[in-house]
Image (cartoon, rainbow, N blue to C red; front, side, top):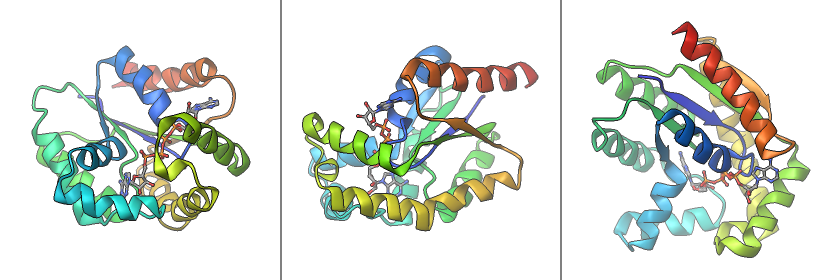
Length: 194
Ligand code: B4P
């Protein structure tokens, strides 16, 4: 099993690159953002509670996303590897993910961390907001709040994985194709070594 985390601030290209990476490597894509938006679309109690938090640009409580991720892992027993996108976003989530994967006899192979300037992040998210219909992408104040949440709670997750020497930083600015090439080089070198 090959499991990887695509890491980075909001708008860094996690969703964009995930789609291509899962197609190339046959991994199961688990995006907490997508799972939460699915709950919102289905008007579940979880989705209704999450929507107001997401609309403010804040993180949904750890216990909610951890439970959601635990179910998603259980629902995919045939997967030959997972790509985690937007998860973990806090150290508590990282510890929980380690436990869940250990229970399944596997672990994270690598954390690929996309680096993008704040100016570029805001530009991309406002641009996506023009067409995505995502309420958290249309308001610059909410976008700033999301970036601030990332700095405050999520950036430290990279330090958590650095302890295990699993973090690789990748330049997230440039063409989608060029960034994809950088990511695949990192993955291929680890898959060969594994
Ligand atoms: P997510 O759905 O994870 O949203 P994101 O971080 O904004 O998106 P992503 O990084 O995937 O977007 P991408 O760059 O691909 O989270 C949304 C919310 O859900 C969070 O704010 C939080 O409230 C909640 N949530 C999710 N997970 C959680 C967790 N674990 N714990 C607690 N709360 C959680 O795309 C951005 C734009 O950039 C696109 O328009 C794309 O086309 C463009 N783009 C991509 N690559 C580009 C490039 N190279 N050049 C130019 N543009 C590019």
